[in-house]
Length: 95
Image 1 (cartoon, helix red, strand yellow):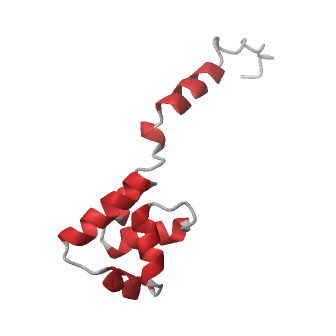
Image 2 (tube, rainbow, N blue to C red):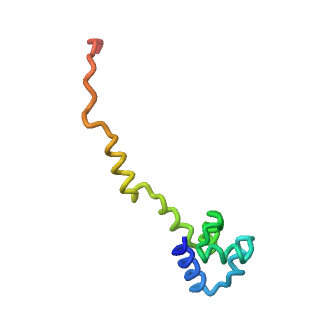
Image 3 (cartoon, rainbow, N blue to C red):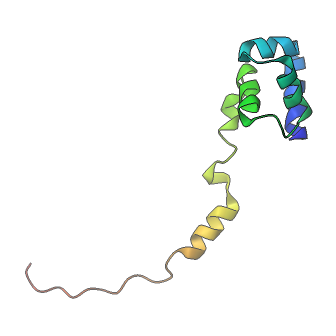
């Protein structure tokens, strides 16, 4: 979380915004925004996503759990797939 907090702080500073500016957009306190930027685990996920939204970076968050990028999940899923096709069922000649 500290890396994310540092990245959010850098993004805010590049936009020349004060912590209070972000807090006003979110309707929260500047202490909450400061905790997010410090990467404190006590800050809620909503606060992190709120700061992303306030900085215009929320679209990037959609890639966080993208199933197409989940290599381990794809490997586990393929291990559960059947290894052979199901047996043919007998047709009763009503065609």
